[in-house]
Amino acid sequence: MGKITRNLSFNRYKYNKTKKRNCGEITVVLDELAEIISGNDDVDSELNYKELVFAINEFLNTLDTERHDIFIFRYFYTESISDIAHRYGKREGNVSMTLNRIRKKLQRYLYERGFKI
Image 1 (tube, helix red, strand yellow):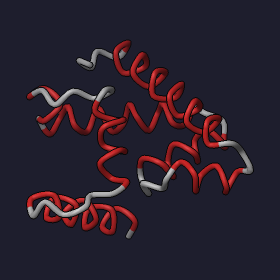
Image 2 (cartoon, one colour):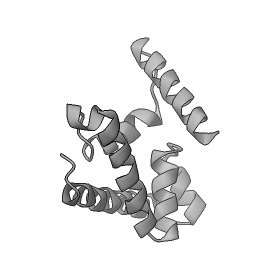
Image 3 (cartoon, one colour):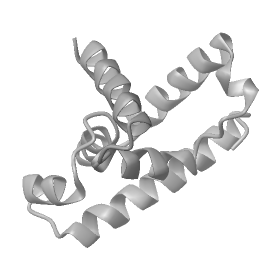
Image 4 (cartoon, helix red, strand yellow):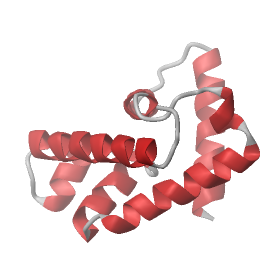
């Protein structure tokens, strides 16, 4: 159910973007992830896509519960950094730095597994 809702949300984002409407938080989230995963043809193939999803899931399982949840709230549910900070009783700068470190770890993790970054 979450996957369907997420995909519908991304479809709505694409619709809103083409009509030059306000894109909100999703633009920021996609920009943050763009520096980790390239848009080359290798990743676009179905087999590599499944391998990438598996590798990301493996990586997420290596994180402690709090970091895992922060990553999921930001990049799956596209919550704002301020909402996540409020949820965990942290400062926005702390959450932002945590996300930055997780992205860098993910980038290294994927590179080590042969994904072009």
